[in-house]
Image 1 (tube, rainbow, N blue to C red):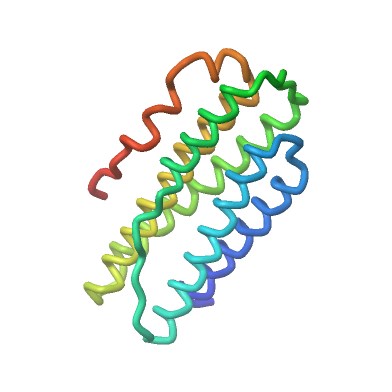
Image 2: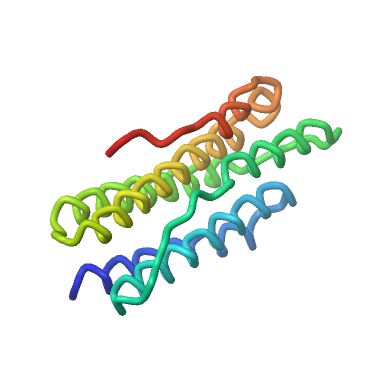
Length: 166
């Protein structure tokens, strides 16, 4: 299997996983964040597909962290009590693992390909997957301790995140 097909399958799997989590989410804010992540993975799929087909392609910065911050702020303002089953934290841990694996995969491929444009796209995809990881770590913390998480300002740093050089 070529790297493009493998990458497309990883992105499709991630998209489906986030849509499954979104369907299970009992809180609208989390459902919205997970749907955003699924949509981002669908965009990544299309970028890799275009790259494979040698069509014009570009990975654009996404506002996923800033959008998530806004959602958490809104959740903080609602008087709702949040309670989660312990097993939900495991589902988000798996999502973190998926994102970390994808990040490593794209960095590895960026080092393997010769084409400078492909190198750039793979590095950009790695950076986007890292943003997803940061967001999912925040969700994991929220699910583990919702009231404490919303009281702390951890999620205010989402929009300050700038992906490092890979």
